Length: 213
Image (tube, rainbow, N blue to C red; front, top):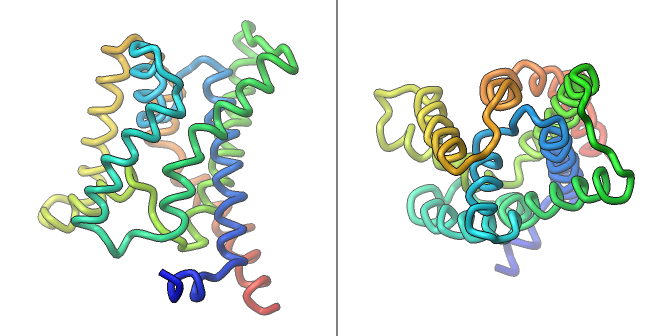
């Protein structure tokens, strides 16, 4: 363990942490827009509400279960970023959502304002995911599940493993009374090109610059 911490690239670790903060903020803005969030977080929000639990606490418990799967079958995907994402992302989302609603008193009702919030959420969330993923400090438990499945059943492309997992999350979210809408579709299918854009114009350049210092 001491050797692992000694080998951590702490500059990349900082980029990863900032990325998770942006990702959590983006999910909070999705929730504020009211069009649905990404499948995994949306499912956890809906189920937690049905159980009378805090969203962060429920997601942490589920991530512990998924983390066990990752340790058993996808140990190579583990890293410091795995723990940061699994433990803190939902709490970061709740923190920003409480600021938006309780401190700032934001309540979006107009369709134009909600659509604008959705677009802002996409940009912020994609920037965060770009920083989290390109820092290469470990894969979140839910994200690793599709990668593990792709290795176990290589004849099925990764895309279909990811889609199947997201569909299950969306179905559970719907059955638990959660919001499933255009935001769910956008986050499930439309984030890739925007993340790639940030990889190319910002995060990749940032990591190259800090690696040279």
